Amino acid sequence: MINRRKFIKGAFFTTGALWAASRVKGASISGANPQLPLVISTWAPNVKANAAAWEILSKGGKALDAVEKGVMVPEADPEDTSVGYGGLPDRDGRVTLDACIMDEQGNCGSVMCLEHIMHPISVARQVMEKTPHVVLVGDGALQFALANGFKKENLLTANAEKIWKEWLKESKYDPMDTIKHMKTKRGAGTKDNHDTIGMLAIDKSGNISGACTTSGMAFKMHGRVGDSPIIGAGLYVDNEVGAATATGVGEEVIRICGAHTVVEAMRYGKSPKEACKLAVERMNKLRKNKLEDKQIGFIAVSITGEIGAYALREGFTYTYRLGDGVDVIKSADFLI
Ligand code: ASP
Image 1 (cartoon, rainbow, N blue to C red):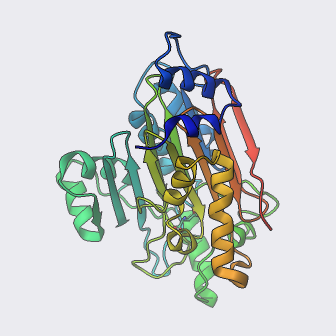
Image 2 (cartoon, helix red, strand yellow):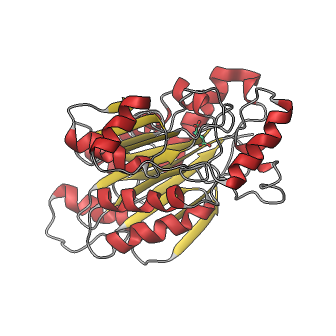
């Protein structure tokens, strides 16, 4: 059990923290935390996903339902080339999807390298709810999805196929991270075009859940899996402390168990932003000069409703809605 009071003390700057302190101390002040419900997602375009999550949260629905429904928005969006339908394929032209979900009780489910299913997040949820396992991969994940009523679909859009065929001309094995992705034709002139989504939500009851879903790095080796579907790397949730999720070059996030590192830093007193910064700094120290051209970003939320983010370099955005229902889009602070 953490020293909850110490943790709260470090976060006394928000109304949400004051509310949580009263809750923890068992004071008679009742009523809702004014920060809640809340939802926060990686990348500015995911403001649309937040709206879908908000539909559920604002009606008193569960955070788990909210994050699932929220991330289904970019999964189904053919214009979104980094998640679900329309996602850029691997170097063999196959769209392989990764997703995971985690709730306030530590229940979690994940699918990796799943093909032909538009909503990997919902398959991940069913892995969590209907099996004794946490992870299903590849053909096994597909078989499970089909047995549970999911439809087999072609996820390679004409646009994604065109971009892949362009890449094939050189076939240079150099899977695109966020920064390179921004320099593609599609990304030219904008910093906000990348939207692999990690979403965290706290519902009115104060319960927290998270979801993360991606098509991974464009033109990766077939079978490559990044951080996004790995519990503790791309996503981690702890109802006593808070939650965190990551985006960017998954290999770097996995190396430091990114999301779990952020949550543990919050457990021992860091604010969400400080905790995200600590993870980025650790990664940078570990990898010395090897992070050139790479981007990694974390977002985090404490169970008190305080939010924060931090990235390796400029260009990482995130978006949230708190209890007042207003959308906020922000650029994260960065290290280098
Ligand atoms: N983290 C994802 C991966 O490495 C990609 C991303 O967030 O851009 O697969």
